[in-house]
Image: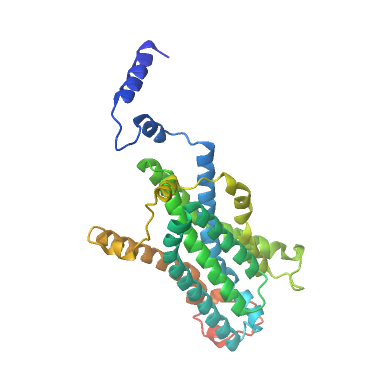
Length: 322
């Protein structure tokens, strides 16, 4: 290292040591916290968070892929008849909207649970909930059973999202690093859509080579069962995941208090709450409308085009362009 550069380095270090602490934070620690290097534990945290966000969407986007074959089998209807098609559409609506409402209500409860039991604990158990409910859904014997288990899956996904965001924000308190971690890990949500598409393709392609379930090799069952994947690494690494130090400190000092929904609409937060809620509602509304309900929006996608027919009246009446 050149002499002038070594001298500058010594002067910079000395200057940092002489700076006063800001709000009780040691300056050298703050300087190191904003550095470019992650520790092994921090990388583990980021990987688990990215895996959780990816499988959030993985679990949610299963239904458009498996709804038709699953409900045709569970309801015992012929999907190529008008009555069978109507029954499948009706139960698809029950499952999609029932699970969305369940997830939304318990997502609100997720904030309270993370304050009560801790960020890491709620994060881990919410991932286990949606993973093992998806596993159980693969063994559904009725449409009612599938409905209940899909609601549990949505509950786990929504609570996990709340817990994961709070966990990451408090484990990475330095603003620039916190924003980067939250942004990059949540970007993996988009990867979840690609993963579930690939999983369904593999299940359809290799279904005959997989163990039979109830005497059949139904790809939709294997696709649902694949939702247990995020639970497997989580069980192994859970002992190495740290709890939020901010939450632990508040619990130690006895300053944890019951959260109030009304605080979000206090004058200082009202505008932020309304704008953020509107943006999220539009984002999730677009996701449900454009992705989850595409098979209902474009009826031709609901059917395997066997030219021998017969087709339901709704399909026979489709425009020739379809």
